[in-house]
Length: 285
Image (tube, rainbow, N blue to C red):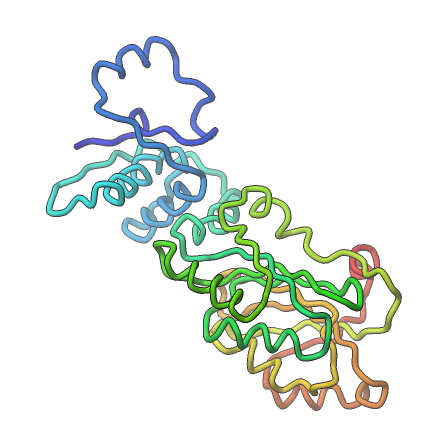
């Protein structure tokens, strides 16, 4: 069986509509059509690179994305299957987008909107409910004194069952959860808009941290913070590096501010106090 980008179409990526003459030919020569989405094509670009160290363009990787879906749908085994990569016309600045969508295309990341109580310790309690899973993204900003809305990415196993297990585990712990993994608006825009300006004025200290990229790193950080400190801002996104870069806003009793860095030193992560607050004042304060 041969699948190439003539026989596999994507949602709004290759062409808006196939030409009349090619369609007339294909309707008599192609056995079927498999559709794939952007995330699945990005995952196919990664598969090609992992296997050949060559970078395909997303429309060129249509064939492999379609082949993977064909195997998934038919459970094909012990067959010789061929796909044709017909393009490597890709701009370097597009690689970031491809990497961003690859985990979703491989169904290795769940994107969830969760509501948690706005009180000290609730962040740590939520992370304990997730368990020892790799958190790939976390966006949170204090808004009011009642409930907090967070945007979190969690690494899961492909197939969907593990994702459903995570969601059910959180709901069993009485967390309202919305699964946004397949929500295009959330993947393209909302994940970058999480946060905003709080409804009331308050005082906080802002720090940047480097977290080691390993399970339990976030929990280790939270465990070492005093119980009466409140996290008012948290932003993190896994970029595939050895260290994750995290922005944290902390509300702490006045007497603790002078000793804050003693707590951070015990954690063992690199950190910087954010003194240039230009961007912070414009977008977060």
